[in-house]
Amino acid sequence: MDKPDNVISLVNLETVRQVSRDIGQYLDPLRFRSNFYIDGVPAWREFDWVGGALAIGDAVFQVDRRNARCAATNVNPRTATRDIGLPSALRRLYGHTDLGVYLIANNSVRVRCGDSVYQIGHSD
Image (cartoon, rainbow, N blue to C red; front, side, top):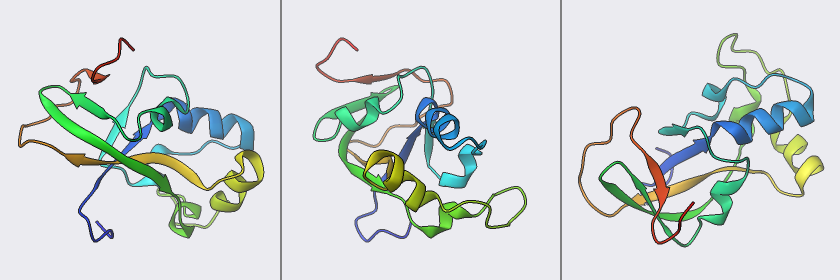
């Protein structure tokens, strides 16, 4: 992790699909080098979780902040070529360069692929 506070990154696959549609180019989710990828949540919903708590299986996380994307996301993870100016495209389309959120672990519990993801204290 290149952040001094040891945060964990989470990317919503539906957000990636929405950005892909809006840009008109497929974006491989691996481009975002996330620790967690979630699916089945509406695009951009993860931004609503900032400041709250999120459970993944039995693990509880604080949703610390949005993840501002850097130039590393311009590189296609399959070809290693710079094939898009993603931060500038995000700014042009949405007025920011953010995609995904940072989490801080509240406890030490194993997370497994397929674990349920839910916002604590909310029904969605």
